[in-house]
Figure (cartoon, rainbow, N blue to C red):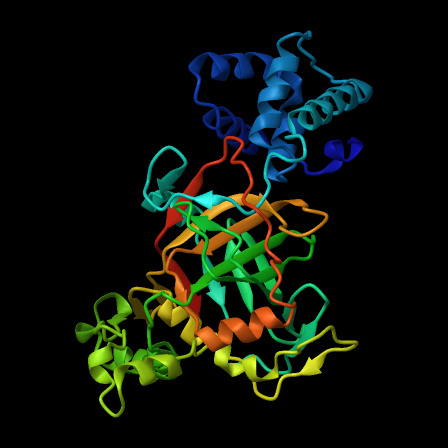
Length: 397
């Protein structure tokens, strides 16, 4: 920690500014007064650490606790500071949850109560959820690892998910039958996991649950059309700003659910049996029936637009930000991998709307692993809370 002494040469004005920032981060008036009393000659060190984001709020509280027990230091000794920071690190290690407290999957309660809370607008803004998926994802491959079927996304394709100041890149997605997450104690037919990773090997998993009995939503390609028209809309906004308040353009919000009344060419039952999930249909014709030795290139590029569109209630084109705001409800919680080694620290996002899957699609997929159960049982909450968020954005590039 000797580098703390050489980080920056701060003026008195800057020191006072950072001292104010330090105090403002603590709510208790008594704690604020104690911090001001013990700062003394270590202003430069604390201010530098704060400016460089080297100390968390919890570490600042720990420093306060240590300083109140020690004499005021006009010229702090380097070894003394090292010992203090070692104490902080040791204390942080003690507060880490023991392994097994954040396991997945879980039984999600859809109604807000003690374990499920509606995310407030301020929380949503502080942890903004943003997707940056291209219209077409090319050069994907499919494989069977003996446990599940997996679609691998090449590193050249920039499918990203950003949340809580971190950005994760889509690496692969795979399937479980039956679904792993339960909703209100009900187990559904299938679950698809989109696994994202960042440079620190941290993971964020986006889950979609499927059921044969779910309502079928026919994609109208509104999301794809919105992408194509966004640039034109922005040009129009520049010409006529009065007609586009805030640069937001509502997309047609008519019901995109295809009802049985619309199937008039053939008997109702026959047409219903022909329905398939449009997203899955892009590659289900290439499902490998047994374990593969190498990846198989997909015949066509993938589009995730139908998946996002049918999972959202509405979406609005925001010309100013070049984004499409999605009203896609998602359950968010801290969990872990559902396969060995069951590592924790995974950011989970599970779509609330249940997706439709055709009976043949489900049987073809499950047959790839001998119709066996490849889903993990639900795990205990261990004090965790699930947050329900309703807003996210898709950035169009």
